[in-house]
Length: 422
Image 1 (cartoon, rainbow, N blue to C red):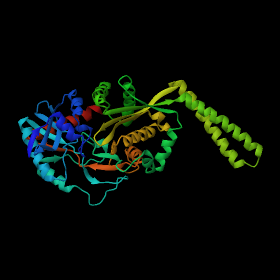
Image 2 (tube, helix red, strand yellow; image 1 turned 30 degrees about the vertical axis):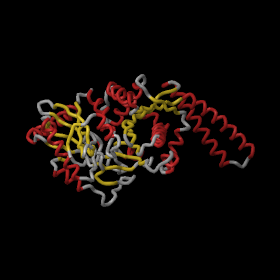
Image 3 (cartoon, rainbow, N blue to C red; image 1 turned 90 degrees about the horizontal axis):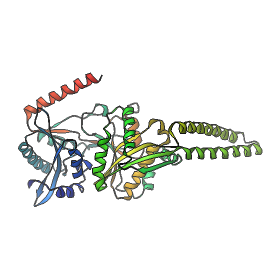
Image 4 (cartoon, rainbow, N blue to C red; image 1 turned 60 degrees about the vertical axis):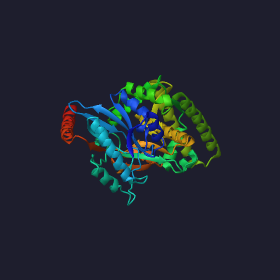
């Protein structure tokens, strides 16, 4: 076998068919990262001129140190073939030494152990053979984090994925969803919601949603230029969809007023019939609910106008799956269940377009109902998405002396940053 530099076409042809691929391992992702100061390489292993392993490598010079390399969600190879992994790693090591590398970071799209929809471990599925092999090859594991708040990995180790391989229609997918999820999907359809596809002209609406969500969930958001750059590059090959949910408050108000009129007619009919106390009480309770809803909608229209963008989703379309990369919504409008409608429609799109999986992406690995991240996990679990616990992040150290100094300096930098932040 021969370790080689691949052409972009060679890499693309292999990448898009690999069961281990993701949008991180596509040529256009290298272009996205270029604007953030990353160089890129496509490398692979050939057996009789056929590519059997490959990866995108990103590289960036670290101030005062050598160059760090990163294979995002890589390598792309059969991780059950440990001999192939060893052969590819040998080629990678030589390549990195020639490039004066400090280390290479990888975080493969490979399960450490199988888990159920509820996060329970499937017995006898641990990949200790793989973990031991990576250690033997010189990879340093960065640990198994549980809570996202405490993660130092570049990408989530815990993700939630809906398997669509045996699903032929959205109706089939809907049958497997939880009762609470079905209710919210059905409720969303009653709320005068409209899904619109974003473009460069209205991408700022998604950024506004992300800003609000970042403040609410306490994470650092990116500037509008980041989203614009990514969208502009990926949209060339139709590898991205950004959807926005608009609510029509005026339509919802008119519908509520019509329902109120029907309610009042029903009350009069029940009074005329007599002996309908139980039914009449239920109608009267509905009357109070509708009056309150109308009042809230009138106040909302006065404050926000007759319509407003209230939620959005950013979806990556590559290989065998659609990836729900970013989700955002305004907290005060979450009662309209717009995110449920959004995911339902995109799952339908995934099925109709032959995707094998819908990746809801990051969750916590703590499934306690009292945990901070339980709500996000439960939302994704409602669609019957299964928990995937990945093997995590590894560093392949090339220069051990400078790597130790780098890790010490980086750790010190993070501590200083926390002190000044607090």
